[in-house]
Image 1: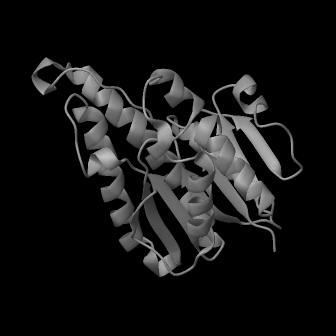
Image 2 (image 1 turned 180 degrees about the vertical axis):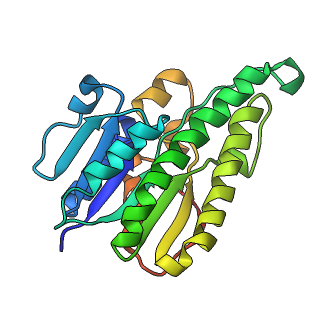
Length: 224
């Protein structure tokens, strides 16, 4: 039987690699994006469905989940939460509360809303997998990014809560903890950095597919 995965954040350097990985493996892939132009970068595939949607809006998240569940021959069996963003700056006493809240909203709200919308479909399908994206900074903080670090630590707590709440529904919930991902955007932002330790997106995509297809692992926080 065919299966459907929602790749929230399925465009860009990491997302496009993840989308390609799951298409190659035979999954039906649903990818939301902020614009048609962004989604067009993924190209076309018979098992790829895209739509313009704002995952920070409950209606947008619900629209994505409904599209994912529309094919009864390919039930929703996985949700990959790759949406997020980073901003750094001053220390806490010099950072406006608005900047702190923006990082929480950017990294937690879309994840919560698309997960909330997808869960009934995962339950109806007899279970599946959810994977969320944290950051190494949640475990090893650095100065000047308290909002981002707090948000990414919150991702890990959210994963732990979901793993407990939905174990009885056969839904496995795990987190990946990437270091620096070798994407064009990161190379442009850090042109003088040593990229030899950066992680290729294709390697992370392989780990995500393992977590989506493996039926025995839940509640894990995996460095990648």
